[in-house]
Length: 175
Image (cartoon, rainbow, N blue to C red; front, top):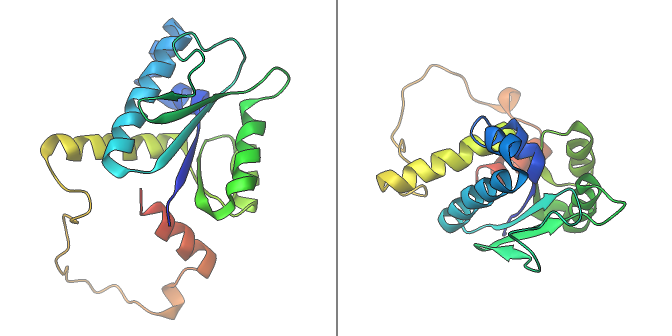
């Protein structure tokens, strides 16, 4: 099953130590940096990615284009917020969506709709790890530590996560 990653654009930018200074300097620089990182991630992983930004008339570089480097870019219309656009998309996509945001309201709503959620900082770490693996020529699908590791940790039903959490964990592992 394909995963549609829905990114809360300004939330991710303003949580990032790399992109936040660019955003303070110029909003467009922050957006370009995020779209660039998402494009690298999409090339490596192949997931459908949509990034949602607040505002109308903010699309200087992305004017009249809803795609840039394979990333679908959406700006909220006059009178609506990016959060409401993300909630609408999560409600439509349901279990096929993975929402990237650290906004508690967006995360709670999306999870209630059946979408998997991940925080902005955690997703940025995954993007950086994928870019690093690509740079080093490591295949992310091969699994670096597939060998058996001796352990005394007990396994069994008492340690098993509930079914819903296991499904969410399985979908997150696709990242």
